[in-house]
Image 1 (cartoon, rainbow, N blue to C red):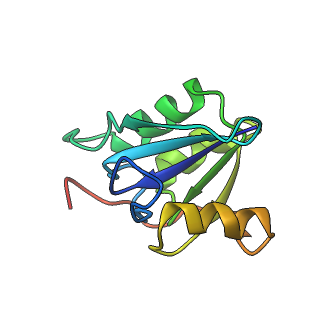
Image 2: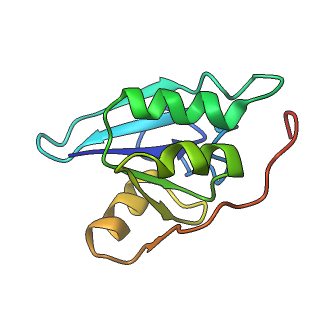
Length: 120
C-alpha cells in the first residue's frame, strides 16, 4: 500500500505540512517494502487550482491513503471520487505521522476544509 503525506521537506524527519494543495512535497511511502520517495508538489506554486493539481498528482501515484492537515473543497471533491482515504494530522515529523496512522490514532477527514486562495 502507498501512503502520501503532505510535507515541508524531502525526508521522513521533515514536518507534515497541513496545507495539502500548497505543501512543498509529497512523501510517498510504500508499506510493503518500507521505501519512500519525495516528489515536488506541482500545485505548490500555482497561481490557482493548487488543490486540483496536487490531488491529480497524488492520484497518479496510485496511493491508497493521504495524510495531511486538511483538504480544500476542490481537492476534497476530486479525491472523494476515488477510493483514497484521507486522514488528518498536525504538524509533526512525517515518520511520526506514519506511526500514528499505523496505530489507528488518526481520524479520517470526511469534509472539505477552507480553501486557501493564492500562495499563502
